[in-house]
Length: 416
Image 1 (cartoon, rainbow, N blue to C red):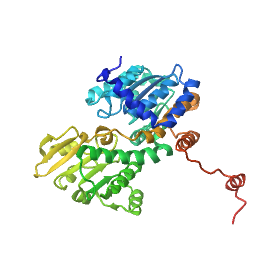
Image 2 (cartoon, one colour):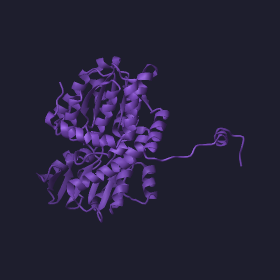
Image 3 (spheres, rainbow, N blue to C red):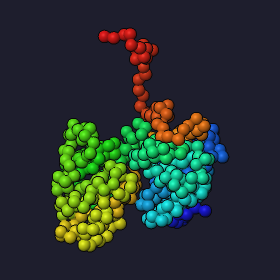
Image 4 (spheres, rainbow, N blue to C red):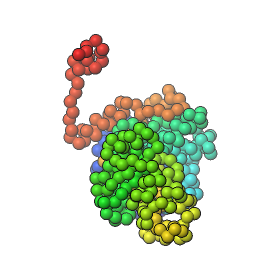
């Protein structure tokens, strides 16, 4: 039933997943709990995630808890084909291969939904969107879902605000052990890694323009500065722009930044962030990349319209020759560059994000009857447990409050 590129890649995938697992000790602890408890016995989980070696460790953890799992890729260019093959050999129903077209991408999502999931796990909300628009008959049997990324949470909150969301969703992205680490350190490192892998440019001395100063944008900006780049931030939120200024970055509007940048990276979750008027102001040889979930942040239709020719330089670089004579280079077709041109986030940071996912899945099984169709935060006790387990795995001990200190923090009588 599964559909992947080449099952003969399974052995290579097994080795890479094993390596990732060795860097993900928190999930290994949770996996042992699940083996004993079997919290997902007779439960079907449908997932639309980046099919990477780190995701495979999460899937194995859920499978160890008794789940039947159907998995599709959440981006046409992020699937690691050897990992997909390995998961099929492990008994997972996988519908994912690298370089899918749009029709194939949505076909894979439909195949996951054919499994009639009771829990959904999303990265970008395409799975939950398909359920609400095309497969409404499935809603009555769904306990709840989870969303892994900022873009997806934005979509789901919009659905909830309009009264369109019909089953509960946990916003895993918004919990501290996810966004303070995965988004900042994971996106920061993996995006710069992808830029270097794809182009082999020397970032030191270049002007890097980062669009968006949320948690992901902060990570990219700081790693860029660490590589010796002069970093300019473009923002629409005055508080985030002020924060970027106080953090020592230059803040400019897009029109100004377009004239100065050598490299442009979008991390906003919005569409048409870099448009035709910006392309026309860019230097010869400007490099464009996107680290947001969907390939809409850089307006490719605008770029096509003002170009007279395009040439594929490599698997990850496309040269656009503009009508004004300048050349601009787009990385990874404007898709999520850290997964399309590199391997995504380091395993050790995904350990926390996927530990949140695993524990939230168990929490859903235990609590779904009390939940309403809205977006929920991750329960605090799950976040605390993940942080504690991560510290333990790193060999770090921290202090505990004394009884006197607890009393002081819980009372108002004692002052100066």
